[in-house]
Length: 285
Image (tube, rainbow, N blue to C red):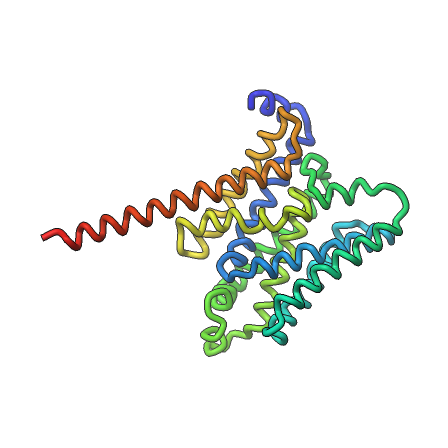
């Protein structure tokens, strides 16, 4: 750890990596909480893996891969949302098909793009140490969009996340806000690709929020706690990976997975202790 702290004061790429980790934690704290509460992890996975099609096409036509990823993610979010609303009985199959088609399109474009695409490899598998200043500004802009949307429409998102039928009865345009929520998830997927890559993005999107869910029941508090957990996990993962020269992305995910398992066991033990205490109190004369 001392070696990492010394290097952090000397190398700008490590400083950029930590800034990227903190920016990504905002996205996973906000959108990840919605994904966990509404139980749409499979939908988020469909959006995430469809992004490869946009990235492959962007590389083929000489456009910024992040721009292609953002376009593909939003398009996939809208398509998946429409499928869920119109084809509810075949939702899983159709989302799985879109997931596969998006990846297949990306692979075809990549196969026709000349040369070895190092940028694409970092987007697929993640390399937070290579995040550029331009990418940091891009991530900051996406975070700003997320925060603005949540501040403006928090009550509507809350209603749609917990009870769509009740939201309809209250006059909330559920379809619009459901699709907008999926667009926020799509934006967050692109945000997190910078840190852990497309392959592992779903884990970072959901695990910090799932850990926070063990301890708080308010969605606002859950977002704050998930953001803090995400920041701790991502920055610690970068620090732990430095000395042994390990890939930061997988290190962050392994740390997040271990933290989730520990949190689940701890939360279960706390619930059991509360039940035993309540039972003993009720049995007392």
